[in-house]
Length: 212
Image 1 (cartoon, one colour):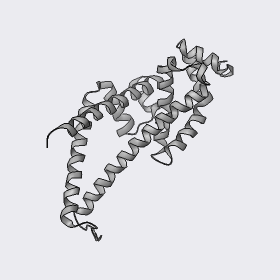
Image 2 (cartoon, one colour):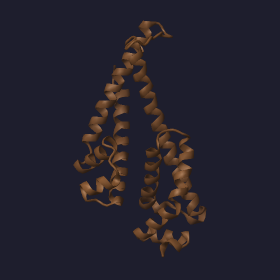
Image 3 (cartoon, one colour):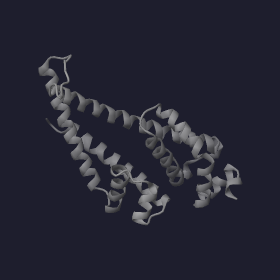
Image 4 (cartoon, one colour):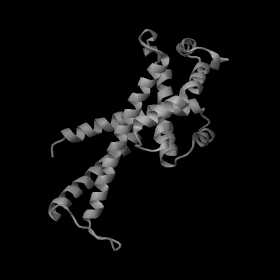
């Protein structure tokens, strides 16, 4: 029945915290928004990144529906703009991860030829080693920061993060393990990722400000 309602009725349902309105909204727009998000990601990341962005979008809609102003545009337009911001943020995160991976590769190459491979540095050896060691130390600092950020989460949220992103468990597996609903899992993972990002940014700023 909710699937047949116009967007303005779904909007009223969301404002009334009617989960059926959210489910109908997801069924109506998830495929369209997922396709749009993949375009914004522009081949960065994986299908899982696109899926998580789509999940983040509808969690954000549920939590921030009061910010939607029907007088400024349609619900579809508002969803599209929120999807764009979420996807752009994820693309920047992916690019940062790729930069760290490149630093790691630089370090491996600086260690010299291994397993019969030949390495010819483009920079003077001393400079290459210096840059690579700085990269290695930065990676160690980042790992320590991630450990601290994870410890700041609640025990349940750490478990969810571990299962979803380290063990790559499906949502169904997490539901069976924890007894939580899909909506509860998506909401807690969204909050956990936001908390991790905020903590990591704060720790990174402290590292930059620290005297060397």
